[in-house]
Image (cartoon, rainbow, N blue to C red; front, side):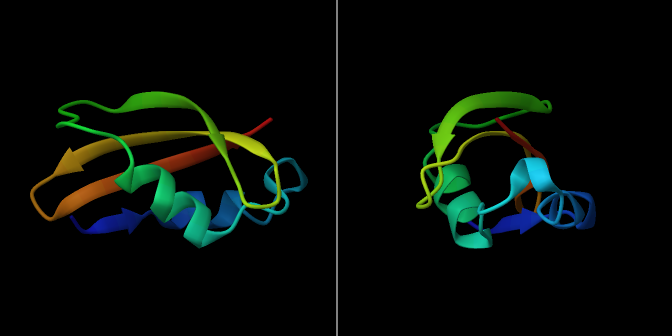
Length: 73
């Protein structure tokens, strides 16, 4: 499955709250969500390799899975 990270999500990675969360962490989290996501849904409790906990908001579109935003804890 193709994972698409929005520019908004990439911009959020530069914020202090999302510090030490990488693109690889996001890809792993998004690929780990089973099933189909028809509407934007928040998924909680992912761990970055750095140990930081984060949530993602994602939905499935024609071209793959769209990661809309990342929320660091």
